[in-house]
Image (cartoon, rainbow, N blue to C red):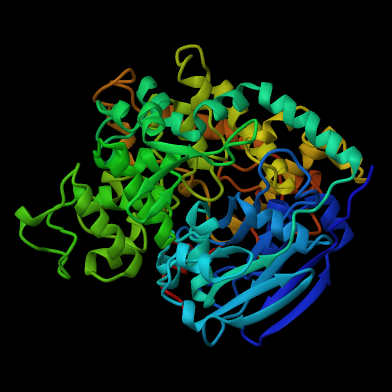
Length: 625
């Protein structure tokens, strides 16, 4: 059993218009696989602390895994860079046709490592192993659907939000149906004046043995609980689930239950849908819904943030708002939170260039037209309010910004309220890219067994999920179909391709990757103070099944101590010398990165953290050069 082995990366320097091919060191391929792991290795190696995310030195890596194009489920690629929203390491993932095309066009390469800034708008075109930089002046200003239609092949592009360096701009593909969404990879692309990457290539053809292996795992996924859940309702069912257990953030985080959730949940979307994405597959994708601007495929996160989060109670109206975000190339979760912040703040309205119009002109929850207007203003930075919110809620300033709409490491939280599931508090706080529910989702189990769960359960679940997903995101496997690999972490697949890994080595690899990303963030000035939640969550939830629950600060701090101890990090959240050495990172860590002397609760001596690390809170959040 065999498949083409990926050994190279294609480097594109937009400043000088150069394209080169580099061999990835063998040890990097062994210890980091591809995707998230390989991207972490490149960013840690090539970026200095304090690099401006929107400057020419930042890298934008569009990466595959060693077996991309062969694995079960939908093929994905990883967009990896330093985030303009958070200042952290950023990995964001997208499905659709682009990943398969890239895997077919570059069968022996992991993908593209892009640096520099072009003088004028450019596209990168990939055809059968050949990479060219071409003019894109005529496309600048086009939205994601227009850009996709104008270019030949499978396209990953930015819309107006990326061009205007909105800190949570996405990289869109398939005309806006799929996005590398959170954290602002699209803003990095816009700062580089890179409008799109267009790939002309057919998906790779697996050997008979690999095809049989894919069929077997595909069948296992169809029979898996997650596969049945996705077939029934895709991520749209998240709305109903979150509302049922009382953790659906409502009207700008003012409640945990939305009385009209049934009007924007799975049944309402089924009624509005004209079909399913990949309808002929045993496990189909999202629901296709017609809007005035064309077909849209809403996801659960968008329905939660733009529906319940804004008090909008009509499914087709929420889909219209999600379609605006898709077309403009803007993360729906952050954008929905930004609009909610404006609705909660005093003295703002969507059309004025002033940030302090009369109070009776203000935004109000449930007003979808005003929400749509503000979304357009954010993407284009065409009003004072839109310009402020384009840099993220944490940077908008004004009335009670941090408390009204919560962020972690400056990233707006998705709509699972952690007051109803304390494990989510830990998952959000320790997420490596900022407030994110994809690194670990203990809410799915904890919400039904709140009183039985202990802090030890929460710590073990969060650490375990973060490590497993770091392994699987280094393979760049479909998030949902990839759950069939949690048993051996993909060892059977790698062995089939002639790569020497077993479950134990892959478990260590996941921990190694998570720790290297932490070292990247520590070098940027992040520590325990950043692994925290806003004061909002100390206030009790006012309604729903989780009414009265809070995030207890003392209990949370104890849980964070236990998390650091489980990871072998210092009480300040810094990986220790022993942990770095155990994970084979001793020769990777540079002299600029602080290391802890001992894990939490351990008094062993070691190398102490470097004094005078610059905090990153005001670093790299401008619009760049």
